Length: 338
Image (cartoon, rainbow, N blue to C red):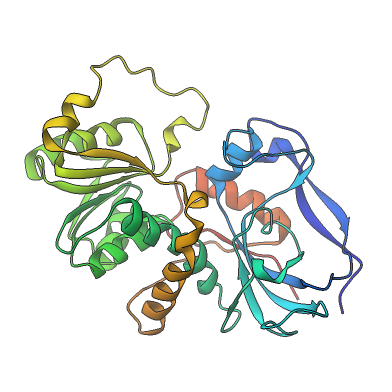
């Protein structure tokens, strides 16, 4: 039965942390319009860095008006449909990656915002969200080619563990940068050819020794010294993809007093490119199709972080877990506890 109200996490004030800016609130659940579907959310995926930046009103391409609901991605089951909806029916499982669809018990919106999936396996959500990000970043921004050398920061994380596998599907040599032996072991299991434990080894020294000027693609979600090490070791026509800056989350980026980077790029024909998934939506459908096919053929493994968090309170735990740097694989929350 569809209720007339539900609970969700609402951003009520701009603040330095997601927890400080939000509250769990009760919202009315309206009846669906002609083109709407009503979805009972089963799982949501955590995007702790994005959540933190949204709380600070620091995501340029998302215009935030307070108050607003939060969360980007969710998997659920359709419980009601509008009179003009076709292609979706009550009982179908769907995923959505439209802000703010994630951190709420129930969702209602235009049917075009939802993608039908085979069942309630949360792996579909990981593939449709983080997997799509990984695939689009490598293929569209990185313009990956078979046999290239690819270095990946945070390689055991939700995004990183999929980047490894996608790069390997192109026959690339993959260097995984991880913090700790356990994460390094996961990266190797997923296909990484080389692993750098940045807690024990200087990433700069290792790359300069073993991969000097050999990185065709360097994927950076961290910034700081790892970014610098990548930049110093790009190959001819190498591409440094900036997809985040976890070290700068405190809003106080490191003051860098060094020569401009042009001299490191110009004679190599190399480049630094920014990946922002929300600006590349036209590539999402093809990416989903490719990833879903790979998964069904057993060519792609989805790793979910342990422990498993539950309920809206679990969202806060999940955000803290992700930004702590301890997670391995995708951080998820089970919303529906029936």
